[in-house]
Image (cartoon, rainbow, N blue to C red; front, side, top):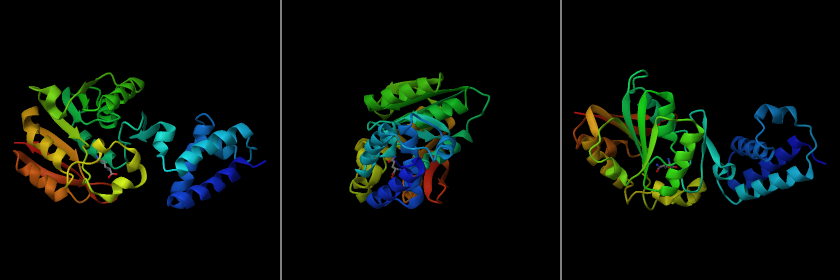
Length: 284
Ligand code: GLN
């Protein structure tokens, strides 16, 4: 009978060979799948029980998750959740999987939201709700509207807001600004679709399993960003900020879209890898 730690190191090798992940990534994913197979134990528990003998029932549970991962299914879909900014968000194939890069968007927004003052925030194309719900929890005096065109995504976002007790969040079904006509916000944030329609990455890795409507946006990937930036001035209070995530090679194009639509102080912030990732501007 195998021990837990040897089963896991074997599994990490199998996953690495099948998936092209590096060794560290494969080990981290195997750990997450094993923790899930064991009913949600933490990392410390796994280390302490590395010499335990694996039961047949555990092996069957774990092997079925590993087989799904080897077929390419994202870990976030297998576990049904992904951590974002220190909190767990439910994730399904109807939503984009929250990315660490997007934490830069959250930090850029938090820098512009007073901690102890009321303000109104809009998160467009919220998906799991990761951005809007995080802002709501970090800034309890803010009133946050989150919206999405996908009813299925919105159901997940509402469930995440409930699970995380984000009481200052309202979720609306909306085609970009359609459900907030006549409303103005202090801050608008969005991680819209921004991948070029024929980008080969859409056929690789996790992206194959995510909703294409949350990823791709026209031939240059900028269709939705152009639409958001063009309409945002009618939905911002004076001096309000618009903050948008985009691709690593889109900073210049997005800055020029902002500058063409009444925005000042337009600049781009890099992600942890040093890539252009978030552009923001203030309504003049
Ligand atoms: N950051 C994602 C990726 O390229 C795309 C997310 C998006 O289009 N909003 O993997």
